[in-house]
Amino acid sequence: QERSENIEDLVSELELAYNSVEDQFKEQEEAIRVQNEEMMAQVMEQYNQMSITMEEEKKAKLEQLYDKIVSFQENIDSAKA
Image 1 (cartoon, rainbow, N blue to C red):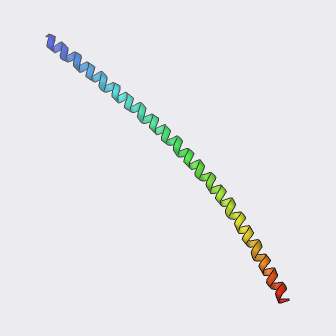
Image 2 (image 1 turned 60 degrees about the vertical axis):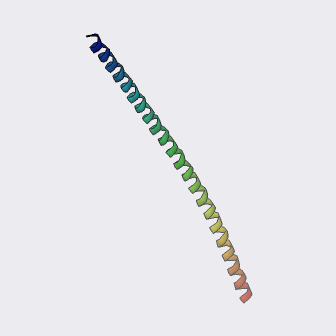
């Protein structure tokens, strides 16, 4: 009888320990999921900002190139004249 009660107590303790580990796992899993979402949002924000910056630089360089082409064409036209 006493041994049976000890085994039942041990089983109860093991169940509590298992449930505690399972609960901690779920909490950690959720924390990692939230952290991952935050990091992905931050990476996407940085990517978008970099894309905007690069697009602005590209536009400025294309405008400079266009101005040079126009200037060269004017020089060619004036040289022909």
